[in-house]
Amino acid sequence: TIPENIVKGDLVDASDFLPTMLEASGISVPDDYILDGRSFFQQIIGKDGNPREWIYFYFDPNSPRMRRPVIEFVREKEWKLYSDGRMFNALNDPDEKKSISINSSHQTKIVYEKLSKILNEIKA
Image (cartoon, rainbow, N blue to C red):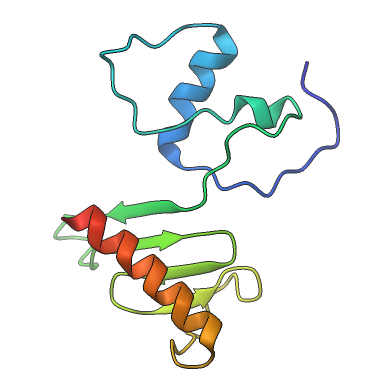
């Protein structure tokens, strides 16, 4: 049963939906089948589950009509770093109006280094 009136602030990635639907349906994933996502079913039913620390997003429009650049970022609950170096406080600036300088504080420098490392590991 899914409890009423519960809102979770956990990060969820598009790749998490398949494992969540499988768990909700009681379907086991074969050991040799690799899923990138992780189930958030436990959070849906009010338990702690296994929330993500960060999510990665990559979109390449690859359409001559769109003529837009690749969008790539990594996000944790509070911070979002784009592959072009722009960083935003996702909680205080959800519309991304003001990019944060990585040198604005010791905390932002630490977050920038952490998220940059994740981006670089994914690209490797």
